[in-house]
Length: 138
Image 1 (tube, helix red, strand yellow):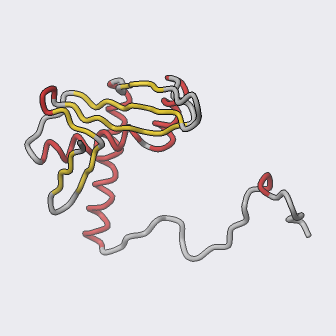
Image 2 (image 1 turned 180 degrees about the horizontal axis):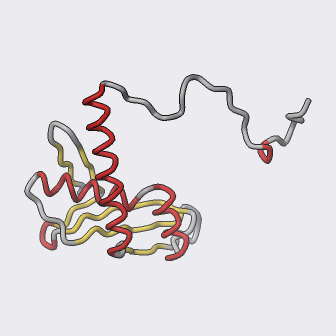
């Protein structure tokens, strides 16, 4: 059974919360559940940032979290699984990322400017490797 916590500014929803051991459980599907493969997915998709944010919101709600456990399940048979916790360096990076994001939001709220940093409307072209049926050069 999952846990949902929220306040006026933030909301989290985990896959599970073991109150008896103060642990959040987060189930993730992945292409590669090996330690190396899942570590790469954690970095690419910001799971370390998610963990830091969840811990912060839970603390605001008066709940201390001792553990944050990821269960990685491969999407294809034989559906290999791995169970992981992030190391302190990864957790510290997540905390720093959350702090930076919240500071950026605060600056935007103060100034009234919510820029993405990407500018106005732009025209994009898909990467060259994605062209299989036509020639992008005309």
